[in-house]
Length: 252
Image 1 (tube, helix red, strand yellow):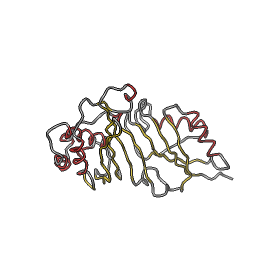
Image 2 (cartoon, rainbow, N blue to C red):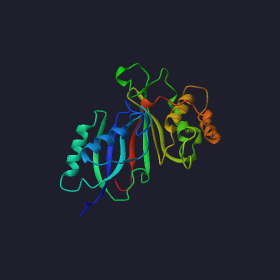
Image 3 (spheres, one colour):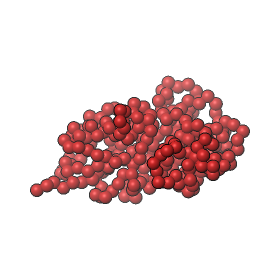
Image 4 (cartoon, rainbow, N blue to C red):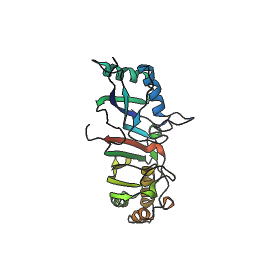
């Protein structure tokens, strides 16, 4: 009699410094690649995970979800033992926070209703923030940047903030939150949307920063969005200040 296959969500956190992003790539080490190799040691079968999205090289995640199917975890305490053993095998910069049995048709990517990111920057040299926050020499005008951020809200075509030649069916996203805040000595950008384009958050941060450091007014960001032209937007900020902070599902 064959064993029943179950679908599981893994809740994952990682420091992205050593990795070429989440997704498996040829000739590069990714978080997903490391995860698969360790899971296959424990499960003794080929593993395929589907992530909630992708993060680029050097980007961190406080919360990422991925799903996988297996027949090996049915039974009392097997899931808890698997979680403990997997964390023991994984390197220190990748952690599995939780394992959740879900419906057979649950999908980590397509079922996600919201994703949130934060971008962190600091303004005085600090060796302890070197891999976790972007160092900026000048403090920008946060009031102007928040006025620009408010103009991002709603459903819009954000082609101007997307990396070119990406394979997506649409560049339309709905931004639900976009806000700059001082948190101690760090300036942090918080953004939530139903979906994001490749490089979108880093391009938005770079554009807001350009507005905050120049004579350009906040409404200039609307002109950039309407242009649908990536060359109109600001430069992308460094990856190491960016964190995927939350992914939401209707059933979790």
